[in-house]
Length: 270
Image (tube, rainbow, N blue to C red; front, side, top):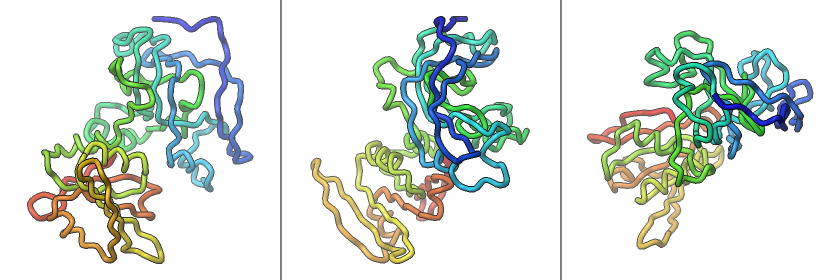
């Protein structure tokens, strides 16, 4: 087990639902439990999901019992100290780590292992940044079961693998076609970077539900072509990667649909 310096408090960007505002507060540095790591944060990104905190939440589905919570559920950092448990002890002080935000889940049921921890059979899962303090702070505690050591040659700000995880989870062979439903711009951009292939982007709006923009990569140059009433099957047959942005789904989730054997299949939530 390592330890923090003599510093006892830290700054944290916290949401207070009583006034629906963010506040930069001075709070105690948390102490890791047996299964946790104390991480000095290096990077924490602002996700569209974080804005859910500012919308009406009468059902109490987002926040926990504490009216004030440190925001942020995506981050990377360096281990400062570890808990006494076996899993936490596998990490060492100074390890660069990336981690995800679910806590209070069992990590053993089918949902935790194969789907997403938020659907844990215990029904007790909370998300850091919403029901528990998150990563917009100088230090954060994370469950060691959610963490992994990062390569030393990767920048902390470039270790997000949302798009890559979806592709890997679908077991896409080279040359596959897929659709990304949702409008997370960073994920869509990452999809393009991972694919290095032709990309078609379709976005639904109330006035122009079928307006699309297609970007084709050729010899490091991009060419944009506007379409109306696009045919997804035609785009798939032309061996493009299709990114469909749906305003109705963007607030909820991002899905990958893989086109195989003349039909869409292999959906994965990322």
